[in-house]
Length: 120
Image (cartoon, rainbow, N blue to C red; front, side, top):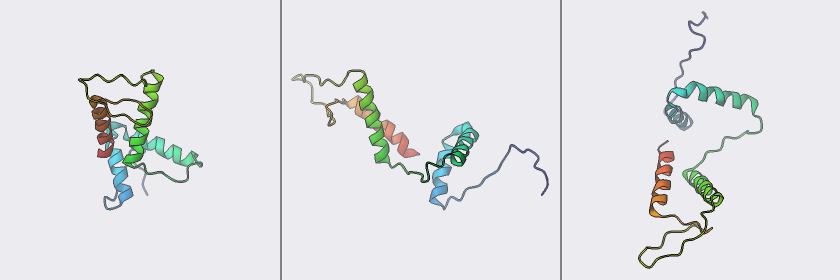
């Protein structure tokens, strides 16, 4: 086989019929111009990390739970976990089990964030 013209350049084609390949296609397309760095990090991790034999597949429910948990921790750290007293003219806000209130703007922001993850 002859020497490559550019040893740093590669061409790779994925099989769109393979579900695993489709996930990688979507992930790489979302990387923009940082695909090479992402692939380098992934391969380096794969070679050197023997403690993670299985790759977990995060479902939208898992991602939603992680986001809600992070938001709750953030709000608790800021001391905003006190439930405000409801006014007669203001509707009740939905609350999670730990008593952290979410108004319509908060719920919309979380929903928008989750929809961005689902598009991937």
